Length: 298
Image 1 (cartoon, helix red, strand yellow):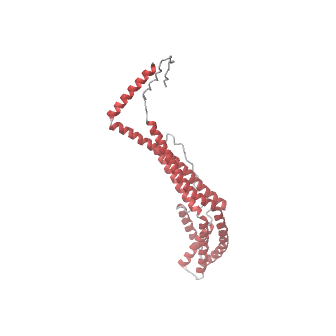
Image 2: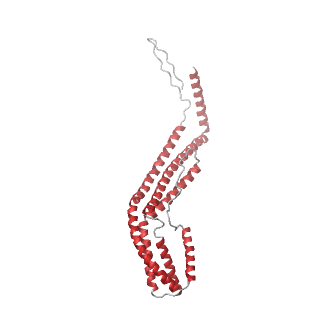
Image 3: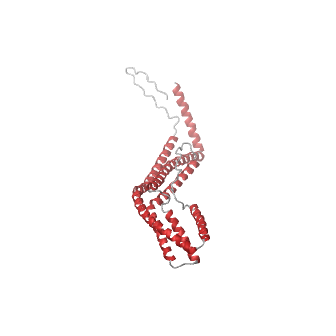
């Protein structure tokens, strides 16, 4: 930047202030960049607020889950214990009434196939939380298409984490219902066997027995205890939080990129719409730049 040299003022001589030099290269594109950055900040704040509301509600359920699950598990273990005794009694009665090992073997093979198909439908046991829940948050110089892909991936993780957590949050009630239904089915089978069923009716009772027995075996969904259950619940909640954070970053970056693209389109549109005016403006701008350069050289 050129400086203005001021001569010492002599007695009685008026000092003339230097004339301000014209802005030779005024570039307002910085205003567009600032406005676009503001759009990104606004979008990130909006998504963060939505995340706080969504995750906050699940955090309350998480805090209450341990006591609910522990009590439900204690009651379920008592029910499973008494039901297992009934299972042993019913197995002996059914095999005696069937009097055909081939039926038992065929039923066992059929059950294995049904269980495999159920697992393919997402009915398996174990923790449903994603093991891979990491996101690349470096969005510098990332193309818009890639940002949209990352956003979709983050949203997919949010959806799956929410589904997993909400399912697990209802596990205390589900556990009580599962073992209750299994015990009820076994009691009903015991009553129906007293009617001396034959043929297909007996096969149906045996099939119901196989299902009820497996329901008791799978009653805890693969969780060894309350700690395993809470660990899975925590992983689902943590993944949801990470995915929300990623979504906020990606949506902000997309907002900035789209804003810049729109600003560029508007500048190009102005050039196409009024090329003469733009040409004259540039012509005058260059004249001011030359005049400013001449003044600086003095």
